[in-house]
Image 1 (tube, rainbow, N blue to C red):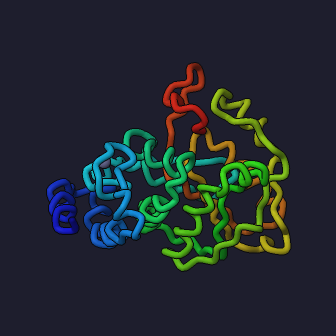
Image 2: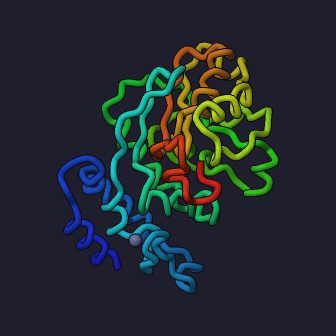
Image 3: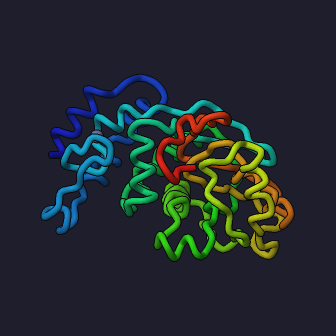
Length: 253
Ligand SMILES: [Zn+2]
């Protein structure tokens, strides 16, 4: 299986962007994907996008993932986004968020690592965009926390989940326009000055749409005395204010 995957990876390898990263980290990623558990032998993992048996993201779908265009978000010193929210990326995030395929966090976090290669950020801590406690209880986990933890491990950064919390439950943003989204999340977060003051913080989110959520988090960190605030998102979605545009999947941001 490993040989087949590597052959596929080599064939689909390109020269730039995601594909350049893919070739560099292919061995690491494939090693992760073939580290099967006993349960996998009984129920082999399937690609969450094309259902090919063998891994949660097959080499063909990995090679189709596109790098995201640069984004900025008010209130943040710098922002990096790894992938464009479509095709296999959309399927992968949906599986990570709603289908409990938590093992996808590790390979997906590698794509965020690659977007940070040319940054000179001085980082003291990494925090995920927090979910409200009720949502965590329902889902059992925070998908952004899984990504942030994996990113922190790869970058050798301190991971801190408690530095920011969601103090107000917010309605799902799916059907809100840009202005409504900003109002929806304004004041929803609070950061702890004891952990944040004078520190450089990275906030991690799964999907960056209008940036309203990251902006609200940055406001909370700034109020708590953070020195620098950076953002990293796994994917960037094109926001279609008038219609629902790319937001055809219920519950996605
Ligand atoms: Zn696939």
